[in-house]
Length: 200
Image (cartoon, rainbow, N blue to C red; front, side, top):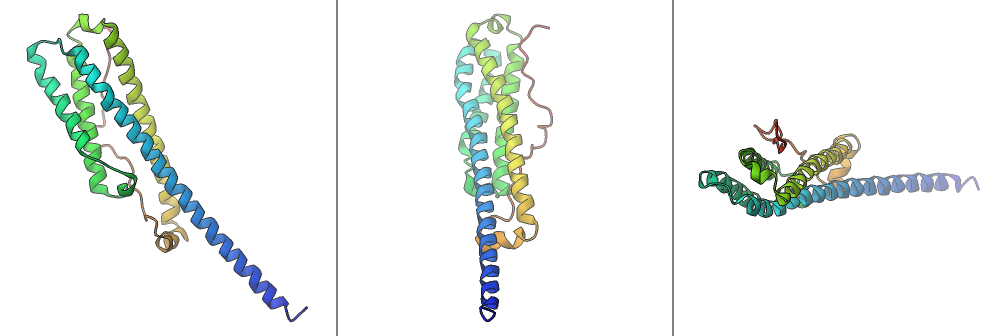
């Protein structure tokens, strides 16, 4: 029995190391999928906002001709957003993510300008369709903020593990990204769009 003891100890050590590698790999798979899933939720809310805009535009199209510049701004911002596609595969591309966030911020600002313009038209503010759209936009903006916060939490958890030791070595070994990009607001977006349809 004593002559087999070193082999048994060596086998136990090998099994522990192999088990640890499997657990570490599975941990990175889970974190990676969490980040990708949460990004899909962020995209889902951005898509929801883009889908609501045509209905909003049709509802407020009765606004006078001098307000057409606001409509054009919203349409152009929505078009820019539609041209930039970010998938889970390029979430670590800082340039692509910044471009995406800038386009989304531009749409938020254009939407905010539209809502401020609507304030001058009390008959529109009392329209039932407009009131329903207003609630939907408010809800979408709140969900967007919440999903972006959750996305950043997932990315933070991934980045902490990937930058630590032994994670730093394991991400290279397993072929995972060494760092995922956090959602960061772009310059000028530190003030959220004010959407207030109530009479002062």
